Amino acid sequence: MKNSSGLGAEQGGERGSPDQRILIVAPTGNDARLTADFLAAAGLEPVVCPDIQEMLRRGANCGALLLAEEALGAGVLPQITDFLSRQPSWSDLPVAIITRAGNAALDHRQYLSAFGERGNVTLIERPFRPGTLVSTLEVALRSRRRQYQVRDLLQQSLEGKLQLEYVLAAGGLGTWTYDVPTGVLATSDLLRTIFGLAQGASLTLAEKVAMVIPEDRDAMQRAFETSIRTGIEYHAQYRICTPAGEIRWIASRGRTTSDGNKVRQQLAGVSQNITLQKELEEQLSDSQARLRFALDSAKVGDWDLDIATDCAQRSLRHDQAFGYHEPVAKWGFEKFIQHVHPDDRASVTQQFRAALAGNHDWRFECRVIWPDGSVHWIAAHGSMYEARESPRMLGIVFEITERKLAEEAIATQANALRVADRRKD
Image (cartoon, rainbow, N blue to C red):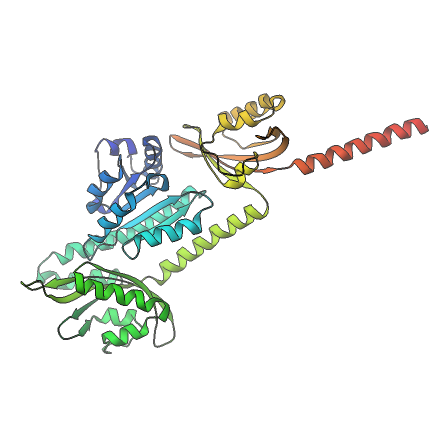
């Protein structure tokens, strides 16, 4: 395991190869440092950036970007999309965004709309298991390594042509060139394989467009034509139907070359079969949706407390258990204990401190006072997990007022029956 830390990265101590560096921007320096320490403990190479501008300055030489949604303030998304649009044709820089809990569908539409086809974006909704973040970044870095291999070989002389072809094949990258004046599309053998065609088969631009499913065809054509007309890089992700009837996801990138009069002569690039990646993203999204549905159906709120900063990420259902209809701006143990009934505070606090000291689960039931002054019962369960210097507690909470009232009613009735039996005797 590598002995690296986010704090060292903040001070400029970068180690390892560029294609392994993960640039991090979080709402606070402490959040970024703790995240970096956790990733370093997992064997990755985190580099903490104080702000988005510093991240973009270093971004031309890194493996992936990791941003907390809270760092994406006004005017930040255009800066990132502009930076991604100026990447070379071989580059498809992975961007991972940690989003707030409960907003997955909204965030998905928002960020996909903002990045368009320019970004290789993965959204990770809170709460998530630490291993999920590590696995996501490891997959991104493997892809990025192949991109750097492609870049290095593209910069070599013709002598390295066989090596380039080998790396392209290893990365599953098929090459193509579209000659603008003649309209001829030249494709590599691997490109034809990606499109499900036999070796040696011809593929014209019209045939390629016809293979794209209708829902994706217009967007792909617009991106292609815009690149030829303006010279900006061509980025597109679309689905095709192969001659065998198989649906595949394709990612294509390309760049134009011009003559001395700036007339576009060629659009050349690479395409890759990303069907497996899309399936994994869909499975992850489905898993998160099922978890969210289960929690909402059971009226269970979830929370993730950073012990060092006393700052918790929560779902709206969590805040509703404390009588709020809208999300509370800031929450932590101190804020929570203020809502606990005075008669229960000492016991709850003692159990919480014991859980921290013994690194064990925190289970309790207590009364809480809502903003309107009414008293309600809640049950909660928290579990500790460590990210080196960042102890955290992940848990759930739900209201049990009706159950408690029912238990009290049953106890009252049972007592009344005992009294009646004594009188009868």
